[in-house]
Image 1: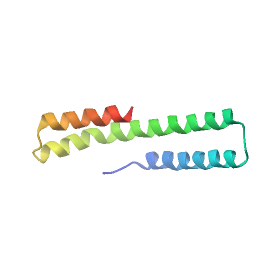
Image 2: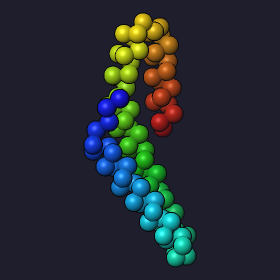
Image 3: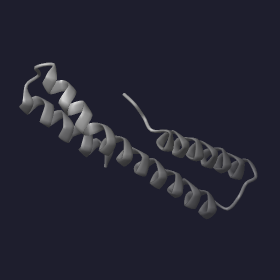
Image 4: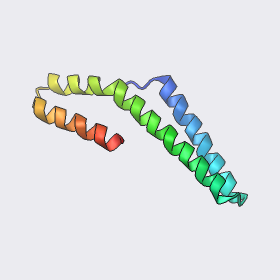
Length: 86
């Protein structure tokens, strides 16, 4: 699977956010501020999931169909991926 550099860069940014949250915890920052930052991390991860699903789902479906897999099963798995991403 080919993942775009923009998606990888987003994940690196998220990694920095998580490090920042850990630092906030080590510095005993207010819990509201920590939760706010954790919420931002979660939102960022959700957006990356959306990008990965959107950019790769069609490719994955075509690949499975070319392998001769059952179209109904491929569609079910694609829907499962979408549901899990939410």
